[in-house]
Image (cartoon, rainbow, N blue to C red; front, side, top):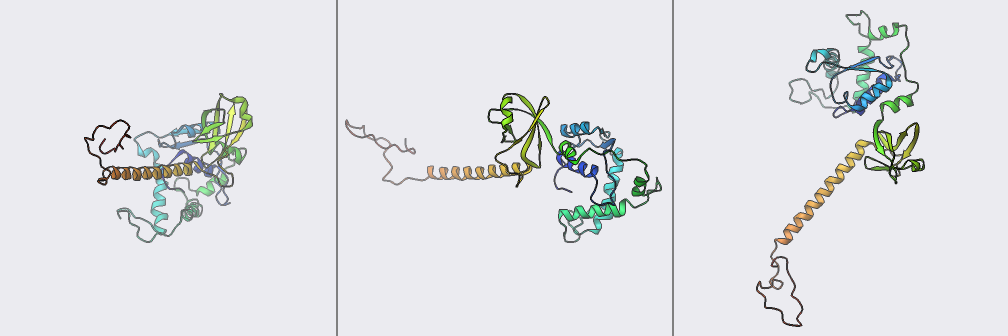
Length: 290
């Protein structure tokens, strides 16, 4: 569960949850699908997701644009959650209530995630489907086949949770997202174009690929003990920009105020001052008059 607009990273995290074996033994559905059917959202049409599905050998099929009925199975699941689960949770907002909850909200995001998971395992997977005459859990267990799994969780994370981008090796390392990554191994590849993979959840290091050569480049400005995500980095930079903008605005107001104040009469010089005599020091020029 997450808040905010759908992104390729969040979609990759959801796919990871779907593919991996679950911690709950009652949730037995796992494995790589042969086909994934989705809409035309930006999170499913991004280059990152296209690359991930090509590497996983999963066929990605998009529904017909402008035809909501082609996505009925997914929308039916959302409708079931909205009508059966959400009314039982605190803070539920019924349709037509103008965005106001009928009772006080009392769930953290992790608690909502847990509630949805329990509903899927205990109710949704145990309910007999009218078309098959079996529950989803029983139908899955009855299949005499093994799900196709990735060789290791590390490889799956490397495919799903990393973003690939081209870069060029500079004399001081590789620049990515305003950070500098450096490795002694990269000294022999200065000026060469390389492929970089990074994890948006942790920018402490990147993976560098170049014609069969690969290495890991750490960032001296980050720490593995306190990982910095791309979202945190962007938030910090936006906050810094707001602070600088406020500081410059305050300075500009102060400068405008000072230039519009009337100086003391003792400092104001006449506009038509007499010509300086030989040996006299030049008069003090004031911005207001001169």
